[in-house]
Image 1 (spheres, rainbow, N blue to C red):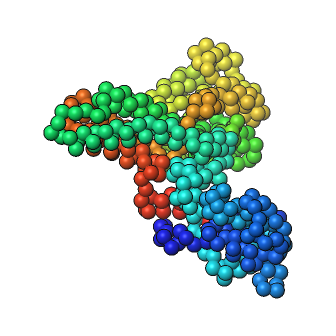
Image 2 (cartoon, rainbow, N blue to C red; image 1 turned 60 degrees about the vertical axis):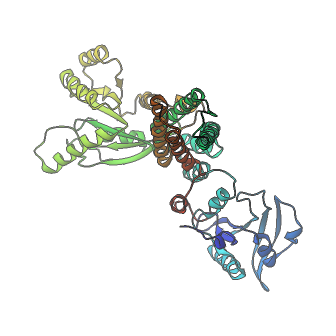
Length: 460
């Protein structure tokens, strides 16, 4: 989805609120003629004589036919989201009214906006950089406190400000080295190699920190994939139901009831956990159940967290130690959860507290000590870095760009160490600037913009 110059000069229109019947609907226009076109169909004050950021009551009419009583909000360029003239028309939420208003404006010369076109115009008009523009979509789709904070921080420039100042200094060095190339036959140095090395090392530290933050950022944005694993009939489905506070999973005394995966999301202290109830881990002759066990083992390898659940009334310490050893070899953080405290063997409990003091003792059926389990999950996610306000990378495109930036910065340092010629140093610097520029939008292509903004909703 790319836009020609003529299309960029169009006045665009779209429904900005969700489709369907509601109390109100908001229709948004942006473009040089947004106020002019609205004035042609609005009966109330003369909008061309009103100040920016004002709201006006009147009616929208198609010639003599009244379509609806409305409120019209004016945002005069450049004091608007797109930096163009913007009008927002609040109508009653009838889909018939919305369609009639849209058809009227299309007849007057407006064009239906494409997905993300309002935000793309804001980017193209310098309202914010590309990373901030992408954060608009993340903010719209944020479904937890942590994802909301991450998107808001990025939208307000948190990500961009981390790299912008250092990038500008790197541009300065690039220009100085390019200047040296013009004096190739003379022994001149406009850019101190020592200062360049220090700057690249500083930039590398920032980039490395942002790269490392992606694991946390991915969790914040997409949720923590958490596998509930253990023997059949250990109470995995009961625990899932207790955490969800609904009967999502089938609970039965028959071992092996769960043959596949049951997934659902739970918001714990502003973090989304994607719990996966799996088939029980055991040797089985049942072909279908064996497939489920095999899939469980694959899920455990790719999980961010594992809840290892065992039955205090039907498990011995040898078996627990064997399972814990297997989990440690996986390298995935896990929580040892001793279930069915009401059926516990006191001797086993005493041994567990001695050998595995980090075990949590719960009763999923009676919903006992589940708060301690929730607290442990939050602890393992480790949001401390995020809570301190540090920038967290949540976008895979940014992560890929940072990886490429890091590699090119390392090439600069290696070139300086090997005392390569200026043209090679300049080439590595330009490559680093290119990847950083792709993240923030100083360097773009129509294909890149089309890929990003086509994922937005129509009215944003």
